[in-house]
Length: 265
Image (cartoon, rainbow, N blue to C red; front, side, top):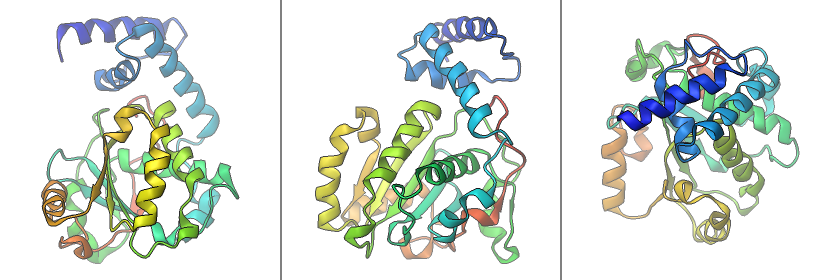
């Protein structure tokens, strides 16, 4: 972290505290994420941070989203939390697109809660998996602590996805939440086994995304790209069907240390 960044963080802390929000427990990397989202402008970053705090209090009053409020979405059994990547030590999610049956258009509020639940759990550095036979697979999360700078790496498996499962509203809600309330949290998003009709859809949809998001979407379509993908994720946590040695671990089978509403998130 250079001197310019340190000065911007110090200024941002002052501005946030003038709004009656204490910042002592908030690490510098968290403020830096907000600053980078606002081109290192302390005033705009402080405003965004305050809005984020108020949103967390309103949208996630219990500190985390109760699974009972997203039962339908979890019932699809489509999201898996595998551990930390070999390169970068970042949380890695897998999404099975062909199991997406709960349309975001039918119940947008539940879908928003579902997405927040996913992001929060990945960022929280989970400490326990509720499946004893897979504990060794999940060892990469052991004694993990949040740094404020976690970036979510994900793989979206599009194999056998029916056309009706392409949910533009779901993508829109997800990226809107990332931009507004999870700045700097999106690492790479790998698209696996994409059929031609999805590639065509994505070309039209992606033009509405910010450039920094577009640059982090990677379609894996040949052996060289697959080798690079496996190398970054690591065989230890990558599911067997993608070239790794792990089993899929449903996100609801993972337990986090505590609620996510602390200032570090």
